[in-house]
Every structure is written in structure tokens, then in C-alpha cells.
Image 1: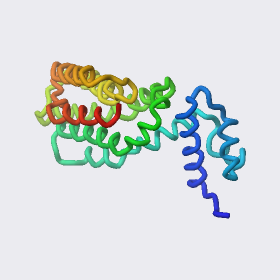
Image 2 (image 1 turned 90 degrees about the vertical axis):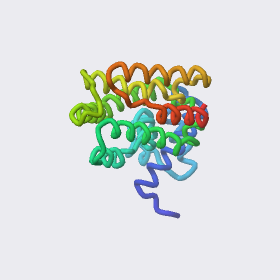
Image 3 (image 1 turned 60 degrees about the vertical axis):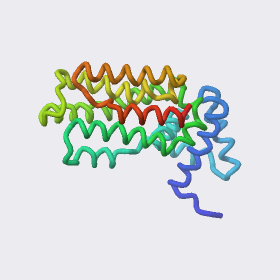
Image 4 (image 1 turned 30 degrees about the horizontal axis):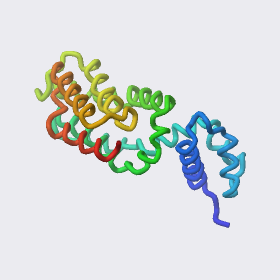
Length: 213
């Protein structure tokens, strides 16, 4: 029998749980369902609880699996481009990240649209991304590429708009509705001096819409 390493065990738990959550809905799956399914592959209840204390922890680990961009974000922060271009690079990184994982996203739409997932995304983006965006806006103000009076408020608006409001996996829309939302976010950003959602970014959002709907 192959050795069950901690990483292998964790990945198996996440794979099985994702299938159950996607098939039956997060609310309808109990920890015992996960335990029973994993038992068929030789995993014990103790091994599962050693890694995760409840199904919420499993959900957050699943979401975190496809949200590991820290190193690439760090590279953008350290680059020699101006603040505005750093923000553009950050948005493009996010869109590319979604496109890379589009198959797992499309197979998990019911899970991604759950209240638990939305709460996680809101907390995660505000805690981890808003400070980064705020710093880039302040850098843009300093180097002259941006002119934003209230960087903190603007960073919250941009993060919410890009990572949540325009996430078609969370809020499914037809092409016209989605196009209007992209334009509206662009207008709001430009209105506060945050000229980041340009033609290139807008086109990338619409291209992504065609992939995940």
C-alpha cells in the first residue's frame, strides 16, 4: 500500500469534499458524508480530523487552493513600473488566475455561489488584497501615474469591484449586463482618479465572461 503522506491525505480530503460539495451543495453535506466517502479509499476518521476540524475548514482550504498568488503579487510589488501599471498587472494576474482554473471553477459553480464562499471571498480580499492595492494607489499618487484623493476608499472599491462584483461565477449575468457592469466600474474608478479599468482590462473581463458562464 502506498504511503499516505500529509500532503497526499490533505489533497485527497479536498478532492473528495469538492466533489461532494459541488454535487449536493455545501449545506447538504455533513462531515460524516466526507468521512464515509474517504473511508472507501482507506482514510480513517482520525486522519481527517487531524487535518480539518469541520467542513468549513475544508471549504476554506479548497478556496485557498486556487487563490495562491502571493509570490506573483510580490513580484508585481517589487517591479520598477509605476503605481497605475502595478494595479493593471494585479488585475490581469487575477483574470489569468481564474482562466487557468476555469475547469475547476465551472465544475464547482454551486459551491462558489454559496453564502459561505461569498463571505470567505469578502473577508479574504479585504484583509489581504485591499492593503496591497492601497499601497499601489499611494505609489501611483507619488509617481504621478494616478491622482486619487482617498486611496483607502478607492482601494476598497476597486477590490470589491474586480474580485467580487465582476466575478461571474458568483453573479451570473448575460453578456450585455456584464458589459454594463464593467463599464460602470470603469466610470466609478475614473471618477475618483483611478484610471485602471481601461480598454485592455475591459476586454479581458469580457473574454473571461465567455469562458465562465
